[in-house]
Image (cartoon, rainbow, N blue to C red):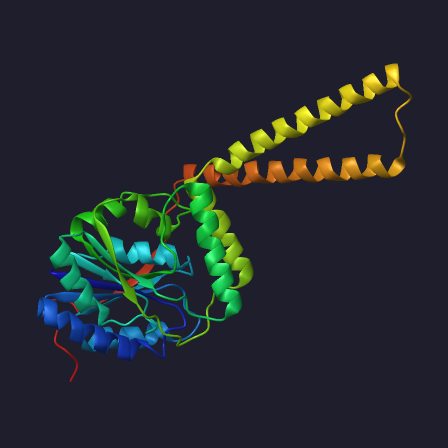
Length: 314
């Protein structure tokens, strides 16, 4: 197989037909008839699966992978990549916010620069003020805490070589963040500036974005644990210094001042810090707990595709 196009489905019923039509047109310019379109249904609550299956019954290039439930966008993408057989793999969202025609310019740049990956970056992040602010905050915090130079406003769309995809699939963690894995997998990667459209409201609420940030940081960095150590050391040192000050004041100056308010405030502060630090450690322990069980990160219920030699319905 020369080319695989991989996309996930979640509330995508309105876009699947046009997406496959445009993706097929772009793929034929590069690979002729030697291509496949893999659609991974990530437990979509609408009729995306029915629409996709109907397409697979009339188009031998379309393969539909139906997951047993919703596992999340990143895990669904990895499942699609694991089932792609093309020498080049084009990963893209199916909601038409990213254009299937980018495949052509990505292909030209990959050949011209002899790279293993060409990915898209938005010149300006789509969405309103809150989405732009939270998106920029995510990238800055992620880079600061992990040291991984993930570019701002990166999009899903990317064209990858076979060897890069094989290397990417070597990562088998269960609590995965695919954005970080794209970077740490290495190889020669280059970007292309793209304009992402707004066809549907984002499914990432503020709480989901925060959860995504916590998962991303704890998946790639132990810095929060180091931070808790040094914070505890700083608090202990300051407490010892204050105790020493009180002893000196009691012996040489006067009795230390009493105060119910200061006692309550200090207890409140240190209790909160203790709970926070335990919580940070708990997140890492929960990740270890998840990894050691070695559960599959997705479960495939069924794969729909036209069998070889099967006739198309008339």
